[in-house]
Amino acid sequence: MDIGSAVSRTNGISREKIEALGDYATSPFFSETEKLVLEYADAMTETPVEVSDGLFSKLRAKFTDSQLVELTATLAWENYRARFDHAFGVEAEGFTKGSYCAMPVGAAWKSRAARP
Image (cartoon, rainbow, N blue to C red; front, side):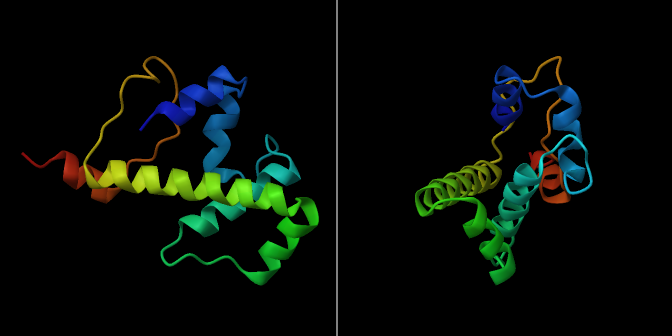
């Protein structure tokens, strides 16, 4: 659950940038390309998936077909992994111990964690 924040830090992403992730659209910590990718990640995470034609046009203008396939596959895998972990109540494994973790704790997660 907390591996993403740990990997990000290992790859040089600052704590401030990780903390700003929830407000990426208005944050000065993210480039326009990063904001576009994060918008795409948000759209792919919606249920049902809602990727507008406008958003996909912006992505096609920025990335090659191969890059779009790789980006989409990576986002789909992360969505799969996150949903799988949440369904089984998988908890953080201590990768962010003593550090900031960008993992939100929603009502569904809290209620699952409270189960005996």
